[in-house]
Amino acid sequence: MNLAHLLMRSANVYPERPAVLHGSSCLHTYAELAERAARIASALREKHGLMPGQRVALFMKNVPQYIELLYGAWWAGLAVVPINSKLHPDEAAYIASDSEASLLFISEDANAVSKSAAPATSLQAIVSINTSAYESMLECPPCDMQSLNGDELAWLFYTSGTTGRPKGVMQSHRNLLAMMSAYFIDVDEITPDDAAVYAAPMSHGAGIYNIIFTAKAARHVIPLSGGFDTAELVGLAADIGRLCLFAAPTMLIRLVEHIAATHADCGGFKTIVYGGGPMYAEDIRRALQVMGPRFVQIYGQGEAPMTITVLPRSVLADSGHPEWPQRIASVGIPFALTEIRIADEHGNSCPHGEIGEVLVKGDVVMSGYWGNPHASAQALHDGWLRTGDMGYTDEHGFLTLRDRSKDLIISGGTNIYPREVEEVLLTHPGIKEVAVVGQHDAEWGEIVVAFVVAAPGIHAADLEETCLSRMARFKRPRHYHFVESLPKNNYGKVLKAALRERLAKDAALS
Image 1 (tube, helix red, strand yellow):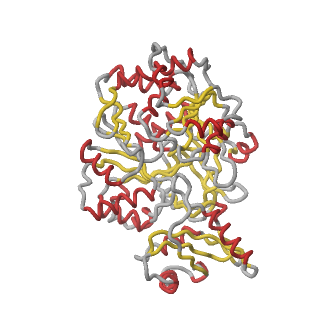
Image 2: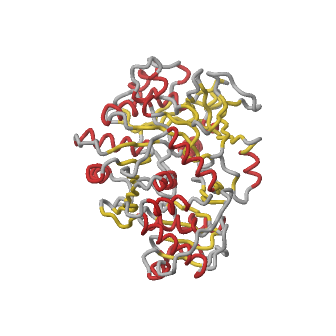
Image 3: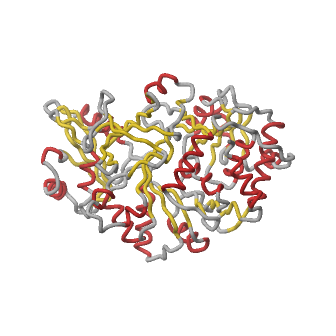
């Protein structure tokens, strides 16, 4: 089935329902959105000569045109290549070239992108949404939707590339329909009165969640800022109501602090799904205290988008449960449509409580990496996806993550998981952010080092006391580096590789 069928169905049954809002103003009803998508599909086919299966890249900020282009491409049977708008034009050009995209739609500086994308031999044209060339596409007569069996490529998502060139994750229409079904089963019920607000990049998980709201003829809200602004979100929640959003933990923490500081009414927020990075127990405790039980945690990867495990709002809200402290520090239980198992280095299943690599199986798992059979073979074994994440399950199936396998610290032959140390350090009231990494050491192999963003007046001795009061002595950091901020990628994930590189350079100079 073609994902664009979701839009056509909602437009047929609920033509007058508001579909796309820019801020609080409605731009298009569902009937209008479907017609615009069908006109774009016609232009892609007839004007640009694209055939089913070819790729269209979107190097765009969060703008209203994103949704109509997405469905227009699917309507024509094409695959979409989302590119984070914060990337450098050279990085965007690499993705356009590697994916062999035929068209590149942009929302910003056409000259910079054109210069970078010149070597992309497959690229026929770069189309700015702010030009008459784009408007002329909407003058084409609507066309029929391309019929698909569901296994065709829909979403070619490039990993963030923190360790080398990003790889293109191939997600089919069937994969994303499975993700949608999992959301309805385990995350939240959606009604036409709900509104998805896109405060995180639409090129990432926040954007692909749109199909869930389209299926229910709910509203899509593009903030006027095009991104994440705490005051703007609070205002939209008040004006529109029943606001739903996906947020990285860093975004959620900022929103909670804003509401706590301003005493703003948060009643207009319905559901906040968080994921994409570690959410520490102290932070979610604070969020629940300030905003109440309106949170759901998901754990996923581009290779299994948004759909590995889920920590439902009912579990997060059940503070009276004897295992609640452990559960809110976990990433929850497997989605109903997903299997997980924990495996040792030989691929054998680990018993409950033993740390190993998280493996995933289900209809949401990618078919492989675009044009990279070697990487695909490394990641996929007998239908199981090797996530590279380390963790363990308890007897009830709750998964607690420790770290990426590459972030594991081995000191004196003993495994130390940075997240465990970070959780302890964050219990200190003066700590805002922390990242723990391993540093090469001639005697121990590696030692634990912490990079800390702290309030004024916090010293290493204070943190040493916190660590020794809560965990084994050998796990504590040997050195603390107090910094103004932690390096992060465009999705808000801390770049631990950059911190390790900094330590290596410092060691070489000493």
